[in-house]
Length: 342
Image 1: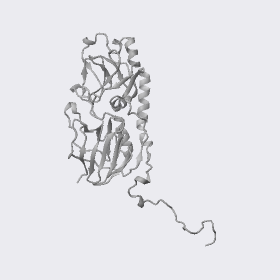
Image 2 (image 1 turned 90 degrees about the vertical axis):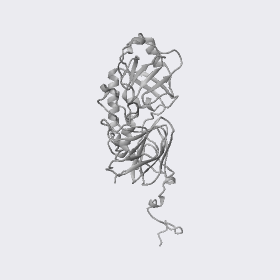
Image 3 (image 1 turned 60 degrees about the horizontal axis):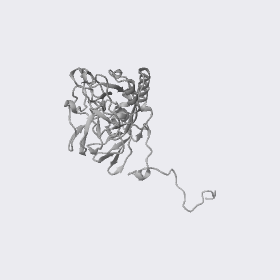
Image 4 (image 1 turned 135 degrees about the vertical axis):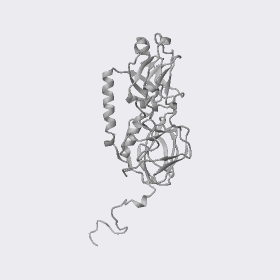
């Protein structure tokens, strides 16, 4: 009998996600997959498995989970409060979840998307080459309390590992390149775009992130006469009201709004994770610099497995403390250890 993970309770937007689907753009479906792909690679490094395995994506808050057998888990993405049988455990780390124990994941402390990875991955049926839920395309659904998920075979036993990562959960500077209609925005408008302090609008989801700002709207020449053409995640469309939208993993495949730029793939996780109200800014880089940035990001991602280290545990939180040999010897309470006489 295969191992299963049961959802005891959960927030309204927990879905199964992996790297998404390729090859369906012509049929009107973007890749989808995890909003924060970096988190999938981090979870894979912590568990020593492929980043292509499916995990749970939790938006803003998690839930309560239990497994039918001992399983390894890893927690990445937006930090959230987490306990196993009411004992706090670390984020950005791997742990053992004993059979029947209750894993509780609370609200996000920063960021937006948290991820629960399981050793062996989640093995729900493959749909069009992936297990990822694609809500806007009608593939899969948000999970609810009572759902039971089949798990894959885990080939390792290592737990208690952690990974230090750069903070990408509070907004910040986003690097972009020129896009199809960048030149239709005059130089003054482009300069104003790079000096404007934007805020992530609360009306954002896996399709797009709206940017609020103070001041005049952004407008391009011939904004209302642009023909619809192909668009991809990362494109920054300027909507009819002059507000920028960064298109995300479940965006549409064609659009007619002008694009002032395109976010570099390695900065998309920072856009996705920015919580409502977080400050963001945009800066143009040329294509050669963008290529070098992406090469470095790929190399760093590939090296994550070499960056994990043992998780130092606090004795105050170790439930089985008496099973540890904390003292490697014993001395008399009354005898002077410096006295050579027996």
